[in-house]
Amino acid sequence: MTFDMRQLRYAIAAADHGSFYRAARALDVEQSTLSRNILRLERMIGAKLFDRSRAGVTTTIAGTRFIRSARPMVANADRMVAATRDAGQGRAGALMLGHNSSVSAGNLRATVLAWQSDNPDVDFGSVETDRGALLAGLDTGEIDIAILMGDAGHEGYRREPFWSERIVVALPAQHPLAGHEIVHWTDLRSERFVLPAADPGSDIRDMLLGRLSMSGAHPDIRIDQTTRETVLSLLGAGRRMSIVCEGSTGVRYPDVVYRPIHGEQGPALTVYSGCWREDNGNPALRRFLGFIKARYALSFDFSQRSE
Image (cartoon, rainbow, N blue to C red; front, side, top):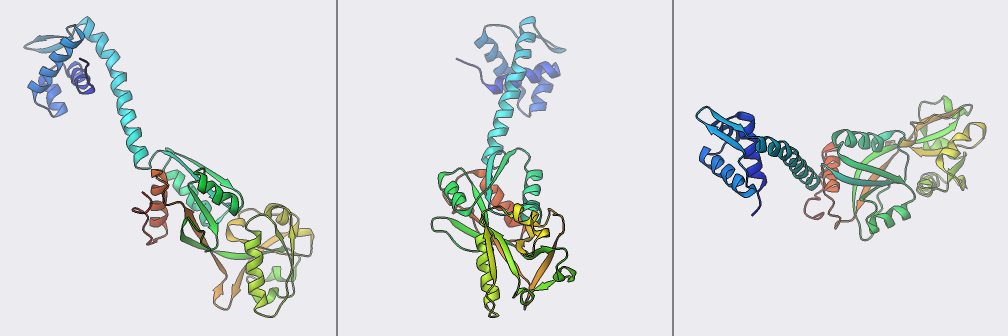
């Protein structure tokens, strides 16, 4: 026979309170239950733990040593149970987020910071790479959720729109349009652009072509085999401009300014969508989806299909 954690808790409480009666009240159990279990414990280990008297109980020499050893065992068991419960509820464990856009500003940055603040015990990680690599990561389970610019769906993955962000033009500070508070798509018909080959450069190119082609323009768009950061850092000395999402505007570059773009219906916006596998059973992912749903007042249902 072996003792259990309940018996250890009873013995520790009796030692702390110096009385079976007071220990039983503190643990909300019958005194007879507590004293009977302590007696069984003493028989199991073959040593008397308590000297009993009308005034209460005191630990024996063996009992003092036993209680000293029992305390960390019970504390470790409590921590193990709490950690397991938190992991099951998504309050602990790990979450890996993928994205293909900047997090220097905008909703993605704000969301990640708020999530980490609210869930400090979740080991949070992120990876920025192109769309294809993110989808591959979702497929292998290396990534729990990818947040991508645009509303395109991908076969085999659940997709939900999360939020929208403004589209802005980044241009040299000496450019005539830099003096405008806002820039309209029609102002950009004869301009020259440079975009990065890295994500989401191709998505922005397609958007730019679609917007300007509607007015009969044939935009001059150069694609450089580089990152958005390199494009923006060299923009101030050139004659071209670039298009970025609001999330890229948190970093300032010499002689470069950002101006919001407006169309006929107001600010130009792009949607950001979450993409994940419905068979991903990570509780931290379900908790993150609930966090997103509450933060942006969304109505999608994920509880059943994610389990």
